[in-house]
Amino acid sequence: MSRRRSLDHLEKYPTILGREVVHVGLIEGRDNYVVHGRVEGNCDIDGVLLVGPDCLWIGNIAADTVIVKGRVEGGIRARFKIEVRPSARIKGDLSSPLVAVAEGAVLQGRVGPDSIVTRFTERRTH
Image 1 (spheres, rainbow, N blue to C red):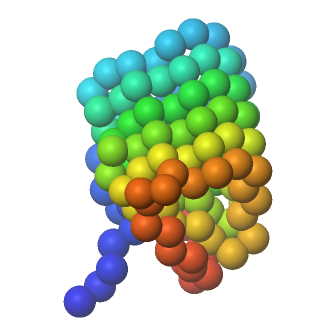
Image 2 (image 1 turned 60 degrees about the horizontal axis):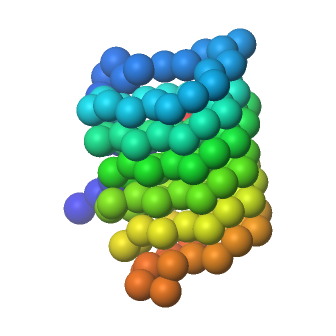
């Protein structure tokens, strides 16, 4: 039995905000999002949110599943899972039933008391 990563659940064609995009304001909707640029604002997403390695997100994040490879300055709340990758830098509190933190990730904040926290070493390169 193979273990699937949260990233494996992204649809083939999610909504993508590119590296040169600066979005100011609220993002909400029912879709999967991949963000490589800069966001100044909050989100409430029914779906998976991937904060790419070049992304800077300033604001609070709420989604079904959140995968962080970049920088987040704000709280993160996921209804199912938060996955914090080795390149992630987070200044804010995390709240989710499951929080997976990779070796090398930096978290400056608290994890919710009801969260199950697991640590992992990244083996895949994509």
